Amino acid sequence: MRVLSGIQPSGKLHIGNYFGMMKPALALQQEHQVYLFIANYHALTTVHDASIMRQGTLDVALDFLACGLDSQKTVFYRQSDVPEITELTWLLSVATPMGLLERCHSYKDKLAKGIAASHALFTYPVLMTADILAVQSEIVPVGKDQKQHLEVARDIAIKFNGQYKEVFKIPEPMIQEEVAVVPGVDGQKMSKSYDNTIEIFGSKKQTRKTIMRIVTDSKTLEEPKDPDTCNVFALYKLFANPEECEKLESRYRAGGMGYGDAKKELVAKFEEHFAPMRKRREELANNIDYVESVLQDGAARAKEVIMPTLAAARNAVGLE
Image (cartoon, rainbow, N blue to C red; front, side, top):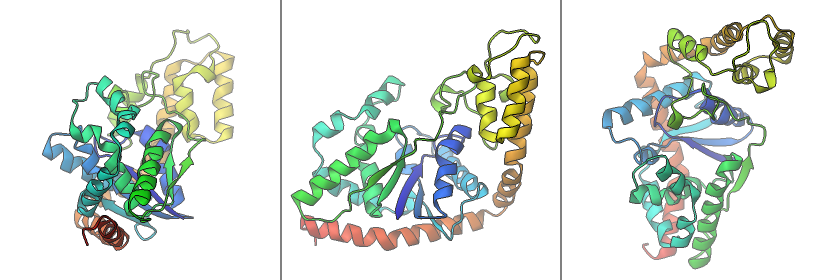
């Protein structure tokens, strides 16, 4: 099955991104035909500094390759290297009802977070639809909170196919039921918007410092503690095996262990998990030409599917 997923280069990737999107996407490349793109057109709605955009885009490429993306199995590309997507966006916008966009909660949510209103922010779902339909994606992994995004894409595809002629496959959602909400250092969902993240590839010193400031309750060292309500333990479970989790859980419930000790255990598991990837990332950062070649090859492979799709859409509306 053909699967599409993308991520914005709007800040340093963190472990919420890793467990919520990256790791599941990388697992899919073993069984599916995966198209994975760096959504830098989308990021323009919030990133208005060119140097930050360039560096963020490179960082995403480095992070994914370091974390195990296989460029032979996965078509990995920068959105901006495939300008055909923006033309398709316009063709789809002709068939997009205003009411559909006005009902999208993502626009309202972003305004509530202080992001300036713009045409791009409002029509973001149409560009997202073009990303999905351009490669004739059959499956799109989404969390429960993102299901509306795919429903919009399906509605636009159906409307276009009915208004003109059938060009696009109707994508199906792959609801990621098992992906847990990754808590940030303040206990809220980990998000760049809340400034509560733990970066995947921050320095060891920075990572330790960030983990050590995870919010906990005020129980003393001697008191028993509840691992089920502890942000530190919730993060530890993401890295540890069942036996290790059971052992630390027992220490929580027995008392005599401070949260500082639990945080040190988390630091150790974090470093153990990401150490090989950190080494790989350092190697890739010293070979940017290779990274660029992967992205260019990915764009060329993506265009093999996208250009016929665009041609069919142009023909359907009467431009060819």
